[in-house]
Image (cartoon, rainbow, N blue to C red; front, side):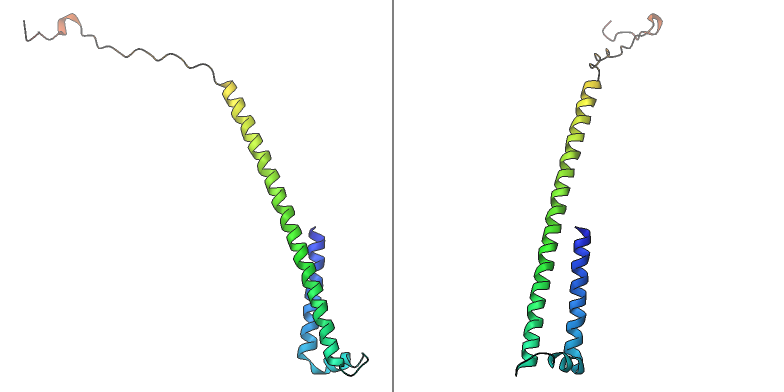
Amino acid sequence: MVSLKRFVSVIVLVYLLLALLFLLVPAVRNSVSDLGNGTNKTEDFFHALAWIGVLVLGLQFVVENLDSALLRRSVSSQDEKINELKARLYDQQQQAVPAPLPAPAPPTTRFPESNVPPSPLA
C-alpha cells in the first residue's frame, strides 16, 4: 500500500508541475496546443488537462481513503490483541494470589503489677 501511495503522489506531483508549466509559460502552452487539430486548440488542450486532473485527484482520493481504512482496521485488531493479553495477565495474577491471611489480633497493653496506677475509685 505504501508503494502505491508513493506512486500516486509522484503522479500528482508530475501533473502539478506540468500544469503549472503550461499555465505560467505561454511559449510552452502555444507549442503544445499547436499539436492538436481543430480551431479551438487551446480550449481543447485545457479541457483535456482538466479531465486528467480530475482523474489523478480522484485516484489520489481513493488511494488515501483505502490506506486510511486499512490503517484503522490494523489499529483495531492490535487493540483487540492488547485487550486479550491484558485479560490473560489479569487472570494469571488472580490465580497466583494466595488466600488472604486472617487479620492479626490488636495489641494489648499490659502494665507490670508494680506500675499499675491506683484506681481513683478505691
